[in-house]
Length: 91
Image (cartoon, rainbow, N blue to C red):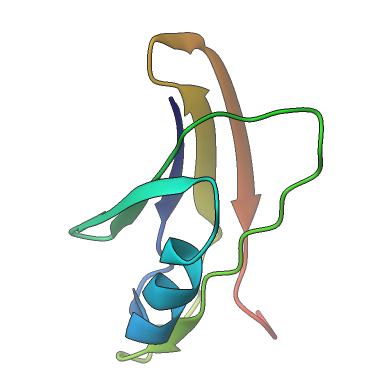
């Protein structure tokens, strides 16, 4: 099982529409939202490119918005961790 761990930008939440779109994906097994982190559980990954789109809604205005992290790892072998980051549009 592969986990994509998306830390949300400060002041943002994931929209319910985003959750629905992700859950309709064929390899998404489960989605959990805890505090400011979205956990996307996948059955497995293969060599095909996959795209996941999270729609976020800004609920609090935050100045000097810092990038948030995205971590991808195998649940059973977390040592192969891949980390990236993203920023808000226009930041």
